[in-house]
Amino acid sequence: MAIALGTENKRQVRLVVALFALLVLIGGWELRGSFGASSTAPRPVALPAPGLAGGHAAASDGQNAKGAQAQKLSNAGLDPTLHIDKLAQSENVIYAGTGRNIFSAESAPVVIEAPVQSARVETPVVIALPSPPKPPPIDLKYLGYTQTEDKAFEALLVRGDDLFMARTGEIVYHRYKVGTIQPSSVQVTDLGRNNTEIIAVAVK
Image (cartoon, rainbow, N blue to C red):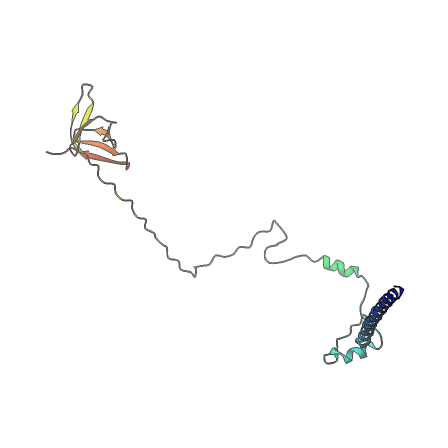
């Protein structure tokens, strides 16, 4: 029984040792790849700082070697002195023009002459408005009149087969309002069309 346990323990130990050796190999391979990649990476080129002696030589080897050289400016002729007299001279300049002073609200506007004749000939457009249609004549006939006891006139009107006796101000056929009644004519207003006519007495 003790021999069987010892054999099983040896197998477990060998399995652990094999796994450890495999992990060591994998780790070594990864480290080798990382070091190999860093050794083969391109090295950065150190550019000379501006103003150094080698700066002009490095620039001549690059893209600027094919183009024209820029002009170098010098501040040897600059005068930092503040000239008060020249400033005062520029401030004393007075605006003087022949036209309107744009800086003055009281300045009179410039008179612009009107052209003698316009170069554009405009023809007036006359639009004729259509005249409103004439209303149809009032369909009433005036046959005559009668006089009441109070001396008021009553007109005898006919429309088709209908006969009406109407005084001034009364409405005939729900549409026609009777106006001034005279022996020879009567005034009638068509309320629907706001049309007033003088209807003469019908001659038999």
